[in-house]
Length: 316
Length: 316
Image (cartoon, rainbow over all chains, first blue to last red; front, side):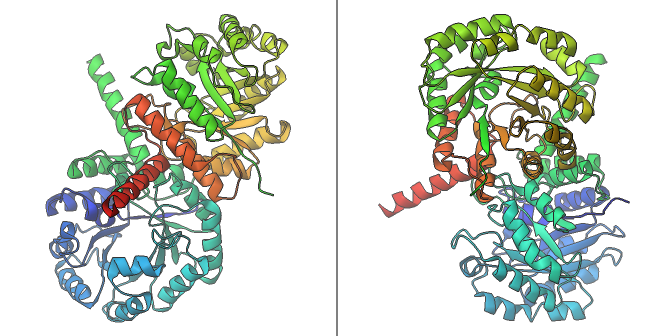
């Protein structure tokens, strides 16, 4: 039997939060529905950070209340503090119980990045998690933890893998069901991935560590391969490679879901994702943000569809 | 001691041959010089196919005669037949003996692709090699062989790895010092790479098999990682990801040299390449072709340089 790999889709949240064009709520809901219909069962839909910080996701309460009911799909919303959790819980009460919305918390492995991102030290961030993780668990939500800059920090450079492992274990100890390690600036290479995973995986529950890799220097799928070989079974990705792109127009951030699924299927892994429908969702994402997305496979497949359509037209 | 990996640069030939904008000979020579100065020691500079087929490389004789003398650099030119070899030998006689130009021959692993590419069956192509490989070796050249569509054919789909291995072994038997296996349409995934290399590597001289991977679906560096693990020590790449891009504007073909070198250095391999100078060569390539190149690391590093320049300006 083929090994099952879980693809954790972050496009609607991590992808759309930095887009120049704010996608209307109906567009976001259509994208979420397309992703769920393509077979993705973990979809990070929005964020309850302050709308002043991320105006693109200011509609998170409405979005959560209107998320399409898809039995078997787990939606997730980012929650930075108690206030965010209160807003999530309120919106969640209006949503279909068929597809509950869970919570995710985040911090960085490097002090400087954490300070710039959430204006707190790492210790202060952990203290703030007290008003989120425990109450969320008590309310019946599952909580995911993110550790950013796990492969390197834009301000501090190299990050000690033992530091990353320590933070991840602490999150698991607080009750996170899964911790996702993020290569926020896309500097990671496979030996480093092996080292980080090698420190953590033997001490963590199977399935409790996920990798969130970036394509900034083209190394995302090589790092996925290193992760697969080390026993990782969950990888984050973003439809079309949407988002995670702080640098320049055209520069790449998040690993594209299509690229990840293409490689996994080519290696005989099962993901439950319908690749053709995923490409269609990618085309929708591209239309919604009004720019060409950087995902490699998406562009190759859309070009293939266009050629086929032209050939069919020429025949007709 | 770190393992040495050879990066075989194909940009000036495989990259420029399909560009809409024909780069003038002086521009090509400047690019070749920049690549050599970045520490690349194998540079495929041009092709002696008929200028009617590839007008962009119609200046191959002049280019070879004027290639910059760089002791230790091995230049290579593609040669399809006896006529092409005669033209290469004549041009080579005018070039500096410090940096000799070797030859490369090519065919496809699938009949349909080979027929469409060179208008011959595979057997006819091997017969045509008689007028190239033997005479080239007799003239003191080294000959490299290319096997295209080794991971899959756009017309026939899957290609039997044993067929690929058989063709590669035949080329080595004819006297090719190295055979480069090409994932022409970028469909390869790591298990397949392991299978192909696993069939060949145990029977071939160390260093006699190279991989020429495409980024079409983002899997190039994952396939490089699989190749490294299977003992491959030479990888083809193209500066900035230039070329190998038959589909659509913005779609990706060749693995970018910067991405490859970034990952290899990050894994502790030695390449002899100066990464900063390579990025500078990539910027030059981009300028010469007048379009943004798809290489991920190139774009990330150029964006970083721009930010640093703006910060320096703001301070001044």
